[in-house]
Image (cartoon, rainbow, N blue to C red; front, side, top):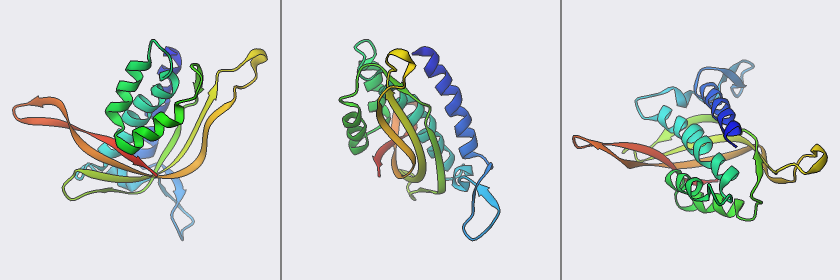
Length: 188
């Protein structure tokens, strides 16, 4: 499992850089030329870059993928659930836990392809944010004999989602200032 997760970390870090940088990928409406995936991720002043990074890396790669991979393994269940619970709240958490509830212990999780599109909307008080994504996920049961691919447990191919996030304080405080993190509260 460690090797797969290490590879997933590197792959998602690369995807993050592509999704959050000025990489020509999608055509702008009404124009033949390509534009960036999301110019909204380029901005620091309203925390847009933080929101994009939090969803792509901290929420998806470092919480959701490990939960999918290890959430039913007795030795890793508590760690995977604790990490998921720290990054997904309310309806979003219930959706993911319900989704993986009946999966077998051993699953094969492909590195997700997540692209943030359009504007990253952050509220005036900097407490909530909304992003729009196009996501591809593939989770299979572990392959059986003869190298055949395992049964598909969850798959999305270029599915569009609206992701709602909230900014919450962490326990890391110094001189009256606390760090914050962006957590997912709804996936539509």
